[in-house]
Amino acid sequence: MKKIRITQVKSVIDRPERAKRTIEALGLKKMNASVEVEATPQILGMITKVNHLVKVEEVN
Image 1 (spheres, rainbow, N blue to C red):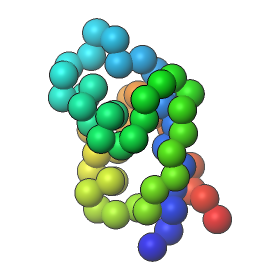
Image 2: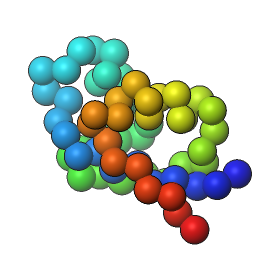
Image 3: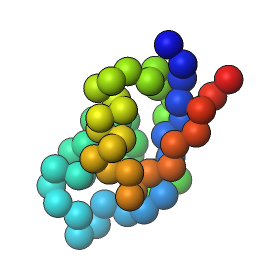
Image 4: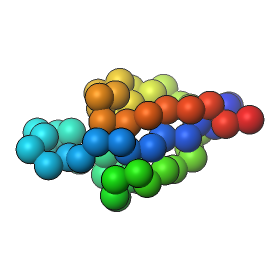
């Protein structure tokens, strides 16, 4: 599977609890923090829910 880099670009302050937990489940802890993960359907679904808070890049 291909890998993707997820970077948190907006704060979770004043966001619904569900968005906060999704960001945490993706492994992001701080602003501008990045994680590299496999692009599984589960991860892509989580990204869809918080796409207004994160930036996604494909990693070669």
